[in-house]
Length: 315
Image (cartoon, rainbow, N blue to C red; front, side, top):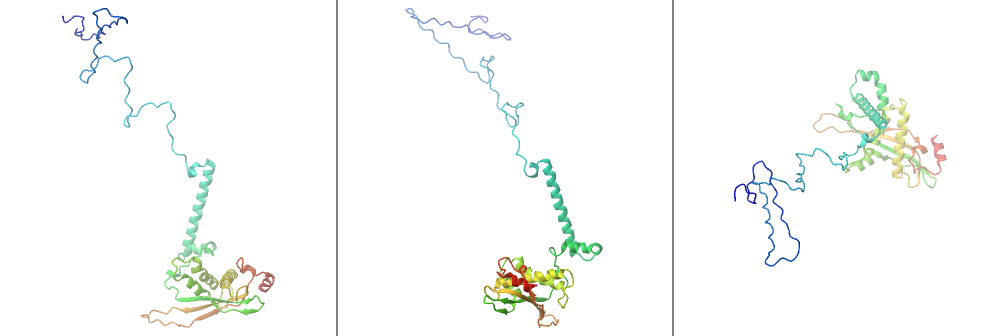
């Protein structure tokens, strides 16, 4: 055959589309004549290789697109729904605008009050200056009595005395007899509770001591109040004494406290051995007058059944 024959082995011409091979006619089913044989199926086409790709594509459709990668996201989004959103706002941001404004004003008010309190405390413990001289009364009204600060420990001459607060009572027992109890050393009772306690309470350490300091600062040497806070310090000290005596069951179970008397016992701390300072080792007693006890001086649950007589004796 020649190069331009139209047979199966004809060479393709460059630039011309390939012609499909002539369709093979399949004879209808039926008996074959004698001496005839079944025509052989055409051999399958060789699969395309990387060196010789096929020129044409089948009509089945374009090849599937490669899935998008992290570095090359797809341009469009599917119609399945909007992209996911972040978590909902929390805290103050979750409130409506009026409530956010109210919360901001509350925070600002707390910050202003905190700054003012710190400034008052600083001026209270600071040395005397122009501000404290002009506004000392306003500072004292803010500090006393709830925020009082005691810096004597850091003074050049710290406390060198041991002060014990003691109390006794006049009680009426269940049989009607009236008698006076012994002296109870309230400071020693607090010290016994604090010894060996790694975390003693503020009440055990400071309640009695600060009550006595409060009384001594508002009374003269004759135990007369020298200001408006004198009566307050008396009632505060008396209520502490009654509470402690009720706890110790002074006078026996069921006894009613009618009067109390408080005294202090002050002794100097001895100087160290290497010091040449000489101090007295004799205790100094300061005894207060008898104070009648009213129902308001008693804790809840410790008030007597017959409170009329106790209230009358207090007046």
